[in-house]
Amino acid sequence: MSPDWTWLLLLLPVAFASGWWLSRGRSERASGARVRGLSSSYFRGLNYLLNEQPDKAIEVFLQIAEVDQDTVETHFALGNLFRRRGEVERAIRVHQNLIARPALSDEHKVQAVLELGEDYMRAGLLDRAETLFSDVVGLQGAGPTALRHLIAICQAEREWEKAIEHARRLESRTGEPTGKLVAQFHCELAEQARARGDEAGFRAGLEAAFEADPHSVRAGILKGRSEIAAGNDAAAIRALERVARHDVEFLPEVLRDLLAAYERCGEKSRARSFLAEMIERYPGVSPLLALTRLIEQEEGRPAAVDFLVRQLRQRPSVRGQGLLIELSLADRSGHGQEILQTLKQLTEAVLAGSPAYRCGRCGFGARQHHWQCPSCKSWGTVKPIHGASGE
Image (cartoon, rainbow, N blue to C red):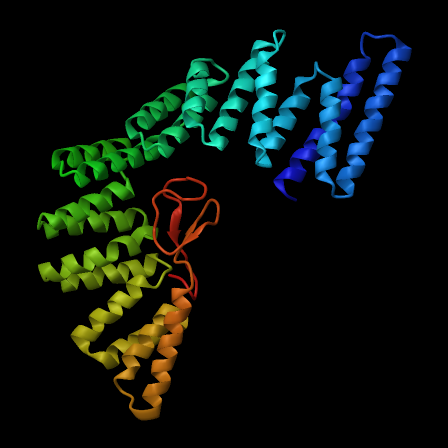
């Protein structure tokens, strides 16, 4: 069921209940007539829904809201429905009209302000939204919601210092841990500092990220790569191994740098040991392919092929198949080599057309890694896809 239909169905009981509410405190005959009129409108709207005519249903419920001016829940439901349908201007008008009501309770007025702020966000009017949320952030009931919206606005505008401030306030108000989120914001500041050549600012950003989240994967990767850039391969190896052991899902993001650092340090034995450990812990194929390459270098191609074949029987992989074909090409000639070359090209084509990463929260697929999901805006949820055609 689509979100529009869900909201319409949720709206039906509200619209119908408004008839009952109007009947209280009035004469039996007058209220009965009013209830009958609203009930008729309710069932007419329901009939439109059942016949998949949501636009006509909305118009009916708008008429009910106009008759029942005192039941604000009907207007809130309509405003939310308009926003979800992309009719932001209509949602803004509904919520502005609610705020303008002199007899509106404080609770409902705050709710209307929050809803109007969301309308502005949906319309891209972030400055207006920020002003509204800042006005109610000190209120007990509205504060946490307003702070979450303010954090979202700061992320959209890349105002990381303000985002950190709001996140800390949210944690203070609700007890909700925000360390991982704050660490991401500090990493953004660190990367900005490095881009402008401010190494001191970069190091300070990493320290703040680790202070917020001692196991920050992103800060660990940045530290490892900064150590490589400074020529400190031993320190880089320690940092990148720590990242992989803390969150093995990010192994593909550090493996290339880690293998290069091992080679520069002459640490092939340590590399093989680490890759063997990762093969046991990580369901993907990256450490398997890397260890196959090391075996080829040290023991020869036949040993590498034998190792890879045994492993692929346990964990089938298109990428592993591609490497097996590549290793087998050297032992073939003529028509057999041509067939293997064609299979290799087909394998590469399959991999080229498939997403390599997916967000664990919303399912967004991507060819490259994102720290923040471009779709749902969650942090640290985009990870490699596993399976025969993935990692």
